[in-house]
Amino acid sequence: MLSTLIKQLSTLIISLLGLTVLTFILSLQSDTPVHHFQSDNVVIQYFEYLQFLFNGDWGTSSIHKRSVLKDFLQPFPATVELIVLAMLLAVTAGLALGILSSTRRGGWLDNTLMTSSLVGYSMPIFWWGMLLVLLFSLTLGWTPVAGRINFAYDIEPYTRFMLIDTLLHHNQYGFSAFLNALHHLILPAVTLSTIPMAIVARMTRSSLLAVLKSEYVRTARSKGISKQRIIWVHALRNALQPILTISGVQISIIMSGVIITEYIFAWPGIGKWLLEAVSRRDFASIQGGVLALSIIVIAFNLALDFISIYLNPRLRRPS
Image (tube, rainbow, N blue to C red; front, top):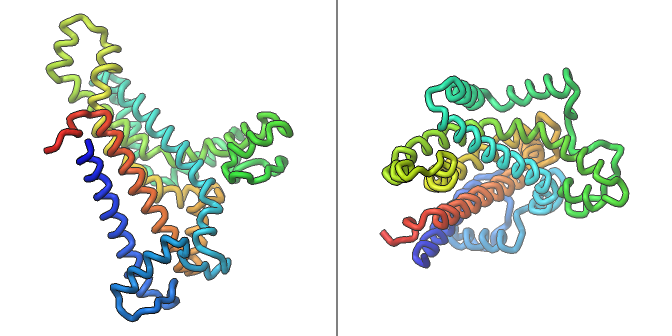
């Protein structure tokens, strides 16, 4: 177990070093330097660059004339709320659809679900987002078009997480502000979760079908164990390994999709902030934002690796 932990941490360190080397090289090519180095030696400059990052000096935004790190942290909670809900929808709905499809293999329900997931996977996220806005917001009027909450609610941003801040104002608004914030969050989260949900559903189906052909599953059936218990207790846990692996890939897809989603729904998060930085050629903000998002993706994948090791004891054994 200790050797596995050391191996995973080594992978994290190497990934972060590779990422910082890449951003450092890009910063040297910029017309407007992000940092001013004391040495002319490139190797020493790289270590100075690392020192700047550890000290929280990620450069100064040419747009707002503020620290890039502070600029990043301000809209970050809005993006976290959106990504967390999108991942929850993608994983839970994808698992449920995949399990349902695998238990009805070859039937009309299986074919319908897999065809729908293929359509969801192939449709561009900006087109899907505009269709949802047109249908649910403009035609049916079920969801708001844009924003995080109705202007009628005066919410003090204590944590900048709107769902938490609305609960902190419970004495003033009750649960109406929280429900309004959740109402604004649903449609962007559904838009963002569609592609990962389709991939998780297809992966769950194929992985579960492979596990259901195993010897121990046939033994469980011969002992008279119910089909539901075989799937939920025995098969699903062993089928989760490839699903967790593919979920780590989905976070990078969601990170790229969040930029378009936030633009469509006027969501005041990192995606909108990065688009503004790109349009106004704010290189310091672009570099800092990409670096921060890449660190989040690496950390998320590392966490999934530890979960995989916990769920699969065979991975703890040294090879």
